[in-house]
Amino acid sequence: MKKILFHSNFSRAFTGFGKNTKNILQYLFSTGKYEIIEAANGMPFESPETKRQPWKCYGTLPTQQKLEQLKSEDPNIEKSLGYGAGMIDELISLVKPDIYVGVEDIWGMNGYWDKPWWNKINSMVWTTLDSLPILPDAINAAPKIKNYYVWASFAERALNGMGYSNVKTLRGSLDVSKFFKLENSQRTSLKEKFNLSDSFVVGFVFRNQLRKSVPNLLDGFNSFRIRNPKANAKLLLHTHWSEGWDIPRLLREKDIPKELIYTTYFCSACNNYEVKPFTKQGVACKYCGTNNSQNTTNVSAGVSDSQLNEIYNLMDVYCHPFTSGGQEIPIQEAKLTELITLVTNYSCGEDSCTSESGGLSLDWVEYREPGTQFIKASTLPESICEKLTEVFFTHPDKIKKIGEKARQWVIDNFSIQVIGKQLEDIFDGMPDIDYDFSTKSEDPNPNYPLPQIENNEDFIVDLYKNILKQNIDKNHTECIEFCNHLKNGASKEEIHKHIVNNAINKLNKPKSIDLSELLDKDDEGKRIAVVIPQSGGDVLMVNALMENLKTLYPEYNIYLFTDPKFADLISDNKAVHKVLPFSPVCENLLALEGRASHKGFFEIAFLPHATTQKFFAYQHNGKDRLQFSLT
Image 1 (cartoon, rainbow, N blue to C red):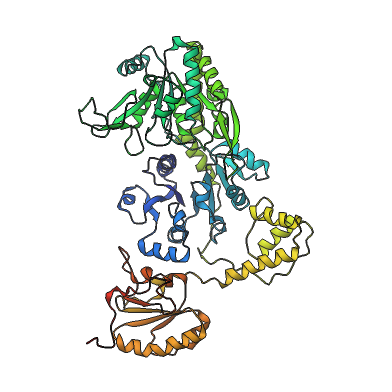
Image 2 (image 1 turned 90 degrees about the horizontal axis):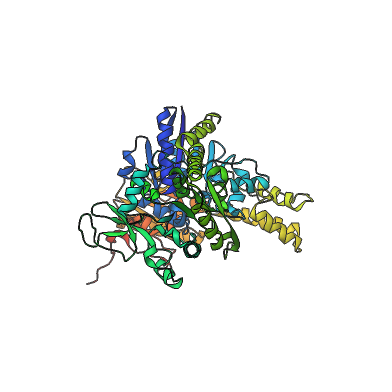
C-alpha cells in the first residue's frame, strides 16, 4: 500500500485548492488502495480540527518553538510559512511517504526540488499558472520535476514549447452533483421570487478582485441593454461589494441605473439569501427580521452550494471576463447548470470558450502587468455586447442543446471520478522507493576547476552542477543572467570565481541545529546557555568566567555555544556541562528562553558578544543573581 502525503490548502477550507483537496482525498480514501496523509496549509501542526479527518492530517504551521528557530535562521521565512515551508522537511521525515503531492501556487513550493528527499521519493507538483510568459519560478523548476502537472492546457503548451515534455495538464476536480439545471417551473418560481420575471439575466460569480474585469463587463452589458431594450436585461453580480472594485462608483460613472444591477445578500442570522439591487451593507433580513444581518455574500458568510445552484439557475447566460486565471471554477459550475458561458479567450479561459465546451469566446487586447511584465487580457466590451446579443437571439432549442453539451464536457473533464481515476493511474505507475530519509544534502565543491567548455549555456550549467551541486538548464533565470554577463564582456574566469565564492559562503554558513536533540532530557528547567560564536580571544575570556558562573548557579548545567573550531579551547572546563556548535538560532533570546506558548530551552541565556543596542539580550526570565549588595 503506497503512502501518499498530499500537501495543499486544508480540505475543510472554502478555497479552490481546499475544495479540490477534499474531493480528491475522499476519492483516494474510498479506494482503500493507499495510506493517505494530509499536510494542511493554514492550520497549526497539532490543531484539534485536523484530528477530525478520516485520514491522518497534520497542519503545516510550525509550533511557536519551531517558529522562533526558523525566524532566527531566516528572517524572511514568515512569507512562506503559510505554504508549509517551515514544516515540510519535518513532515517528510515523520511520514516517510512513497509519494509527495504538492498542490499550491508554484512559489509556495520554491526550493523543494533542491531538497535531498525530492528525487529520492516520487514527488509531484500540481499547480496553477495563469499568465504568459510563464513565471520564471515555474520554468526554473521544470527540469527538476519529473511529475509536473498544471490545471490549464495553455501552461502545458507553453512549457512543452520550451522543451519540457514532462509538463502535462491535470484539471482541478469538481463535485458535479452539486450543480445542475432546475426544472423550468422551478426556475420560473425563482425568478418570480426575486422580481426577475421576463428579464434576461446576465450573471457573473466571482471574488471581487481587480483581475476580474468588472468595468469591461459593465460597459458591455450597458451597450447590450441599450441596443436591445426588449431584453429587459439585468446584471447579477454575485460577489462582495466591500472589497475590490467600487461597483456603486462605477455605476455612477457609467450612468447605469443601479436598479438594473442585482447582487446576492446573505443573512448571517438565518442563513437565507436574497437577490436584489444593491443598497448598502448591513440591511435587515426579510426572512428572520434581524437588523443589519444581511450583507453581500463573502468568504466568511456566504451561500451554500445548493443556494449557489439556485443563483446560477436565475441566469440566462453566464459571462466571465477576466485578465487571467488558473482555472476559474465558477465557469465550470455555470456549465453544469447548462448555461452558455462567455469567457475571455486567454489563459485558462482558452479551455472554456470552445464550441465543444459550450462556451463563446470573448475577444481581448493585451496589456502588461507592471513589474512582472506578464501579459494580461483586457476583455473588449464590444465583444461582450456582441456575444450577449448572439445568445439572446439564439433559439431555445439550440440553447438547450449547447447547455447539455457544456454540462457533459465538465463531467468528462473535471468530475471527481475522472480526475481521481487519472491520479490513481499516475500513482499506480510510480515505482516503489527505497530511501532512508536522510536530510543531509551534498556540500558545494569550491575546488572544482575552471572547465574548458565553449558553449556559454553548457558552461554555466556545468558550474552549477559541479560547484553548487544544483541542477539547472539553459532556461533557468540565473543561467540566462550569467550568459548575458558573458555576452556583455565578462570572462568565464570571473563567472567561475563568483560561483566558487558562493560555494565558499554556503560552506561557511552556520549549520542549522535542533536544540531539543542536543540537550539532556533530565535537566529541563535547570539549564543556562552561554553564546560566544567567535573569536578565539573572546572564547578564552569567556572560558575564564565559567567557574564563577557555575558558583553563582551551582544547580544549573551550563551549555556553551561556539564555532566548532574553538571548542577545544573550552571543552576541558569542568564548569561547562556541554560545548555545542553555534547556530543563528542561538542569537534569538526568545527562542532560547521562551515566550508565549514556547516555554524555551534555558532558564537563562547569556549573549556576551551582543550589545544591548544590537540585540534584545537581557530577559533571563527574571532569574538573574547578583554578586554584590546594593545596600
